[in-house]
Image (tube, rainbow, N blue to C red; front, side):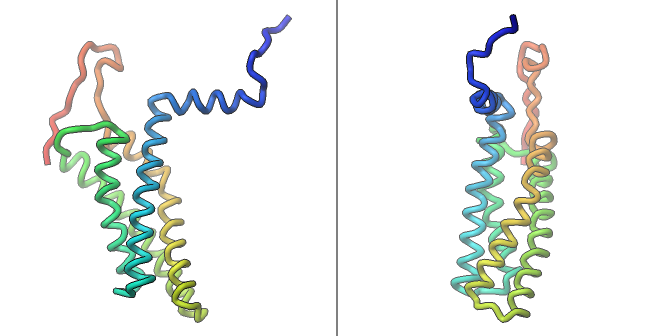
Length: 178
């Protein structure tokens, strides 16, 4: 007689998802996602404030300001909370690659925001509609890059070398400096 399953089949997906979320990688993904939510709220708020409400500059300039402002808490929250790194940041191994990935994201975002603003202008949309379209374009661009940035951060930027995890007795702390 085959083994019986104590958990109803409909609950297997939920149980395995909860188990995965409790894993080290799952916890990292959840924390990275939470940082992304914070970063998105900051960038969307700054973009809407500078472009939609205050009308300080064209959409692309406001987009750049919004993304630079949001990158600061994103770096520190990702490094310290999501990946659990402490101490001084390493300029060449962490800071510059993080900003390079942020600039790549901004480049895609600039293209989508510029397209959205031109579309709004050519279709005589109201400023409110243009603002919503610009914010949506920014959000879409960063949504596309979300997974790629997770892999970059997890595999290259915030890597911790833990000898205990690979059979050693002590953790190897890399020297970190800015």
